[in-house]
Image (cartoon, rainbow, N blue to C red; front, side, top):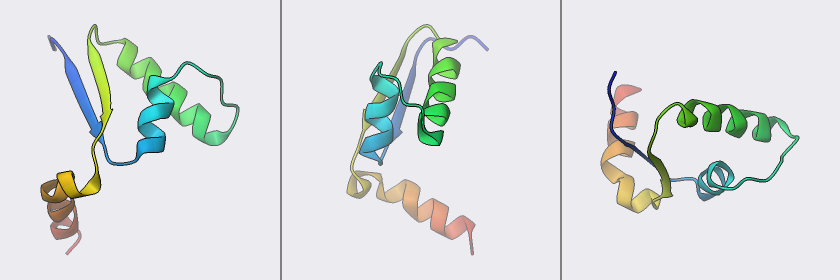
Length: 68
């Protein structure tokens, strides 16, 4: 794939900050965020940003509908 840039919008601020920051976290959560960072490094340009759940209502509606 030839992807120019990737924007990832998250509604969990702790995850968003953990992926953006360069501090070591030895917990299981830190292991997951390190893995995410490694995948993101494969893309030349990426941005991780926090958006509130209210701004993400469409996605949450679709997720709920898929579980029915």
